[in-house]
Length: 416
Image 1 (tube, rainbow, N blue to C red):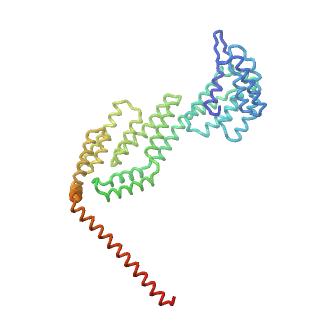
Image 2 (cartoon, one colour; image 1 turned 90 degrees about the vertical axis):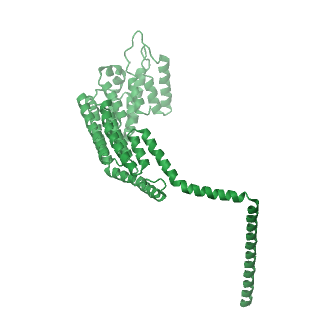
Image 3 (cartoon, helix red, strand yellow; image 1 turned 45 degrees about the vertical axis):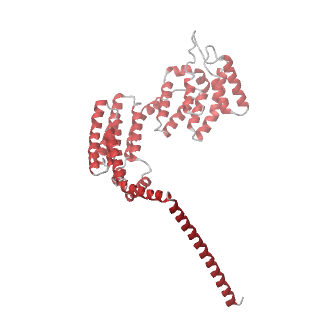
């Protein structure tokens, strides 16, 4: 019972109270609610007041007949909620406070804790949904009827309609915040640096010096841009889309959708027109268009513009011999066969560049194989190696004797 979703179930679990019918079915029985009440008393005697509170709540379950312990359980739950709830609020544990107040039937206090929690987390859409559901139930006449015993025990309760008004205004406010966050996240300097990085990579796959410089540039780029502003931008705009579906007014919802689509279009056009020097940015332009939730013909028309731009860049890269870059552009243009063909030509070019070195290595290997396959040559090499070892040992021995002689001479000179 320590999450807001679980706490909200405290409300929905009681919605059928007072509606017993001839064909009533219930998940609980008189024996079960008595058992829950007894457990609550045991917990309370043991000083485990939180556990006691939630067991008293379960003891108030709706039955097809009168609940024999409902009023006593409601009275004890309210008393414990009065004691525990303010402590949780004082510690700013608002979710816990809501759980406690809700279980104790202190609905005004529960409303206060819930709206305070939502104000501290205004971008949490799931929390917004839970608050909206709770407050919409509160304003129904059936709420008071279904919770008559708890309200009678805990005290009068009248739902404050201004709370629901505040909650229903949050989706539009959330979209506005997201658009502001997106503007702050998007960074054209990142786009410039990425294009420069891509364009600095050597076309020749065997240009080792060039690739070392490219690797150093990549490391510097990663150090400077530890976050991807384009990804952050897309994520925030997707969060804005999640807000729009909760706007209660259809006209206002369409207006917010249009604001979001406009921002997506602006980003896509900017990438395609000014930063097409990096294939991944053209791919991002397609993503911006794709997030607009357009009908297929309209979306295809926008993507076709990006594909045309990618094909133009691919041709330019091929003419410059940058076949790997051309292959990447063909992928953006949704031309997998051309992309693979460019990579194949790059592999053939690399193989041709490496052919002389490979032939030289092959010739050297053949020479070694021929030398080691001739027994006389092998024996001659062995003898030369042994002779070299003997010479080395003799030189070491001679050096050792010379050192000993110099030591004796030194001792004489010093009178030792």
